[in-house]
Image (cartoon, rainbow, N blue to C red; front, side, top):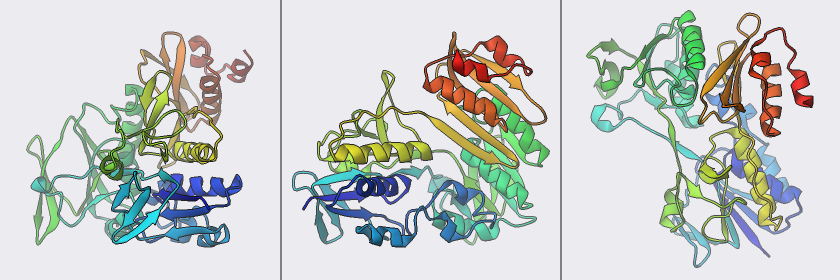
Length: 403
């Protein structure tokens, strides 16, 4: 009987094995995860879970009983040490498991600060998995002093949670502005003002020189401009990298992640990849998407293709971020934009529309689900929107969908 092995028990891995069973695969399935808990949601970790508003069991994507009921072998708390594509085996230490098809849903790894500048001190945290947040949580308390390194969405979300818990927060961003890599200046300005209104001290164009400590624990920081800070803990949010170690060891092609074709197949025809770790063709270029929707959609399509569907993956990029009482929803990819059109609503409701010439590329919508929904549907349909109409707060956007 055919055996499918999936390495990586996150959102993509869980979605892939569930889809295999849903589509009628009756062979053996083994899902291997390095963490000792069943697959779970990651976005709430740094928000509701860290705030104490969500129990750990509510993080689980599916009850652990689901896997037994579906006859899926769940290997938790175990790390694959090697893949042998020629023999079609994976090694877990001394144990060897044979596969007919293999899927890599290994996700991504957070970038960490070098030990040379104090990155190995106790109290220096990344936000990636359950253990990271469990280690951080006790220190996130009223009156504590936190340094957030990195002004991307990870850093800003961490800053928001810390501020809501009464922590005195300083955030440093080496670039000229927060969100510089992923958003227009208009979005940066919006979130800078939002965080300032909650007491967060944002310092842009300033990097971290080094952390200082006592007894092996972080106690302070020296910034690139020579400023010294007293800190009780540090959160590092300087991005993630695709987890490709096993793929590289197996000799698979790597290109900003594990290189796949449009159907999710790697350079080895028996090995597939999906989620944060996979790069794939998209509109004449190659991209990698770090998002829950992509992890689910791509993994489900790979599951179908492992069963012979032969479908190309057509990505529909969308993302979100929750900070304080603001929900940011992003549709599309803004790479290559040459102008931004602002649409204002009431209160904190606002959206920024990215164009390249007359082409609508992306929309950032803050507390504006209607603008997000219309923008997303237009982008997915390959349509644009009249910038004059978009900029008019009294204009109804819905007719754009019928144009």
